[in-house]
Image (cartoon, rainbow, N blue to C red):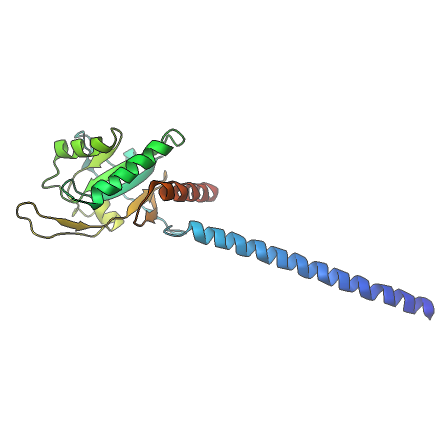
Length: 215
């Protein structure tokens, strides 16, 4: 009887310890899952995931007068900004930020490019577009072409813009966001203003790491 009781007394603490360990393990796993989810949520801010938009074929001309389409963004990370060369504030500020961003990451990431798409093609001809983007960086790409065309980048990405009055030196209201296209030609993220190079680089590294892990 004493032996049975002694054995029973030994088993009770053991079961308690095992229960505590199981509870602790469950808590740890739950905590790690919560941390992972929180990290993904932080990365996913502005990230179009799990359903990034696949871009369709489009045809336009660049600032050198050459054809530009899906082939030119395939296997590259593209930062795309929509604006116009007569823009008095948002465009030059954003392009300056992107120039600093590009300068700081181009040696580390060889497959990164910056694209400026005009929403005012009537005034932004090839020469004007070339002078504008080259002012910020000789490697920057400027795209012309009608933004109203169904398969244009402007239409596919869904960028809103509005011409106040097409007389004289008119202004164009447009998005101030920067859009990120991954090497698989998918719209994966939108970076909302205000922009600064430090934040753009930080977000890009997180997004790239996230997308690379999912690929």
